[in-house]
Length: 160
Image 1 (tube, rainbow, N blue to C red):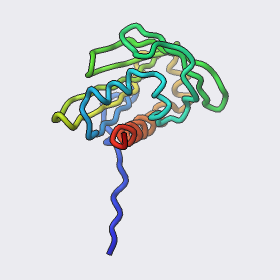
Image 2: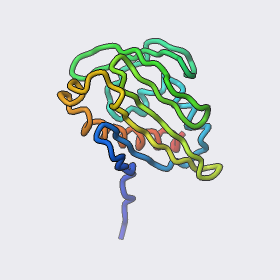
Image 3: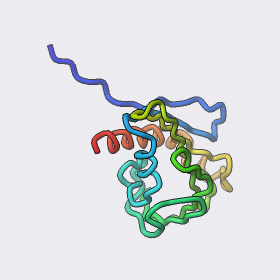
Image 4: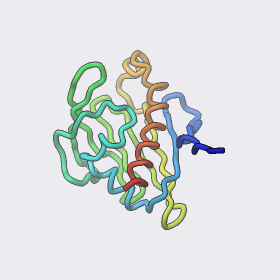
């Protein structure tokens, strides 16, 4: 009798706010190793669960508070977006936003020297266009996207 491993899934978190979508996962790696991927904008395409990032087009090698980085995107149509890092705590937290002002956030919490809990949050409360987010059905879509991103991040980190 052969048993196959269950698919890896991120835990969907109930935030209590319909404009904030969040998920978390445990990754078998130190927080510093995971954080180095998050602060490298050229790596974002590798773990993006939305599959909208086509490539990195501008920005620093390593993100920090105030850094700006551009991405070539595709969501129905091709476009470019400029992001700015608006929250940053070395090794623990990073968040960026673009012109629409909604934020993508990552929080890392060390469980042990070799395990880290990673939470990704899409925060639409800071958006300048709630109508746009509702029209695009962004909230249900991003709930799935943050979970998929974490699963991809886990695979990327653990597979080396």
